[in-house]
Length: 108
Image (cartoon, rainbow, N blue to C red; front, top):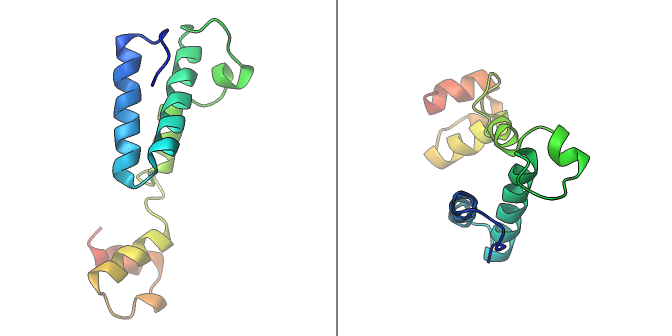
């Protein structure tokens, strides 16, 4: 369970992250570890913790990092992600398609 030093906001943030990760299929232990690390990094960035590493305060924020990894940015999903989506939809000829063709085929 989260540390006592966490505020109610950080407790909610921890639960939200943990629930999202378990919904994705991560194990309970892994989800708890990632959620705790994320909350602790945010606390360090906001000056809520007594000690903070340089990377916690100067590195890219965890929220921004998650956004970059969502593949919804300018590049969109990768070709492999589109290929897997096409495979799930049963689209024929997908192995010879380019990224753009796959995107059109899956309706993006």
